[in-house]
Image (tube, rainbow, N blue to C red; front, side, top):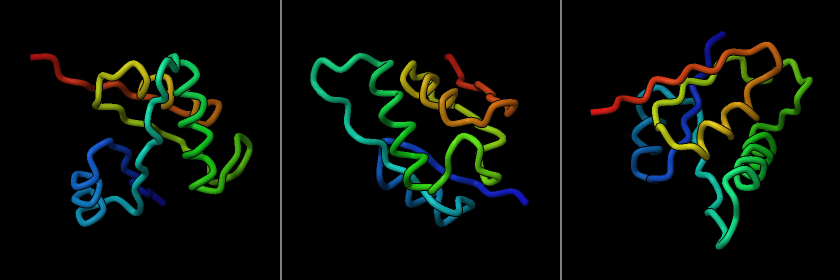
Length: 95
């Protein structure tokens, strides 16, 4: 079974994704003042896992993450959310 899940920082784009193909959407918590990207990515991944009600060993863990953002924090969060042995695909476009 394939389930699409959208993550973005612009709410109207998340709603568009939900109306098109995404089963659900996740709006990450805001970056706290002075927070390092590593700390933020750990916190965002934990919040996403809580929303999805999964842990690292759950059969419903995430098999594939496709990142088209190019954001350092998103890359780090994506690597933390994909299951061990899963696949992370980076496909940001630089123009």
